Image (cartoon, rainbow, N blue to C red; front, side, top):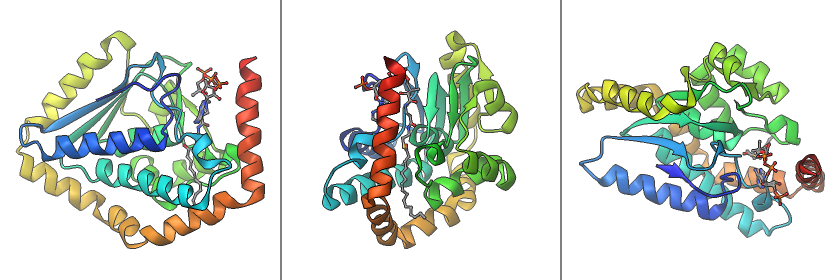
Length: 243
Ligand SMILES: CC/C=C\C/C=C\C/C=C\CC/C=C/CC(=O)SCCNC(=O)CCNC(=O)[C@H](O)C(C)(C)COP(=O)(O)OP(=O)(O)OC[C@H]1O[C@@H](n2cnc3c(N)ncnc32)[C@H](O)[C@@H]1OP(=O)(O)O
């Protein structure tokens, strides 16, 4: 799957819906045992959740948007397929969540590309299931420091921390992703799938059990004037940085 929503592959409601439908189709296709996720937009894997979806919209819209974010994660993190992220550009916040939800992460070895859960920098809080996914990849201490600081880690640092599994030159990224996929697909599906479920079930079940509460929390949180102000200021900062 190649993300192609210029300029920055931000995860809008429409993008998330299409992504989830795409994953569902592949999941239901018995001929498909694995998926490599990458981007067709130069230098950007995904800029994370589309901030405009969280600014100045109705309570109903926030609820629909957050349900779509949850749905995408439940499908990807809970997928029976082998999932490999070929991270060919920067990948903050929700973009990082997508990579973290895969079975294996390969990143282009460009120090200008960064990845991480930077929510704290926007004045917002990564939800518990973002945090759980992160902890499952890098461990508690690294996740705690990185989340509190809202760190975006340049590719070499991301590899040192275990946030990505390996770095390769950008031109070799897809070749390497295909080799990793072949290695993972060499195992019997049932054994690999049951193992994956065993490792991820508790974290998936926790969101399933608290899904409606999580949506309510998101709506309450994002509707606060102080949070709206932080998000607006962040968008302005992005625009200023450009000019
Ligand atoms: C106690 C707690 C209780 C309850 C909690 C419950 C819920 C939790 C609540 C909230 C959690 C919400 C979780 C959010 C996770 C996220 O994903 S937030 C998004 C974070 N993303 C970012 O910080 C990335 C921001 N973007 C960038 O850093 C750069 O744009 C990037 C490095 C990706 C690319 O740089 P560059 O190539 O230079 O491009 P530009 O910066 O010029 O951007 C081009 C245009 O795109 C717009 N844009 C960029 N990112 C986004 C985005 N994420 N959403 C919307 N729009 C974006 C940018 O403004 C430019 O627009 P313009 O051309 O100026 O119109």
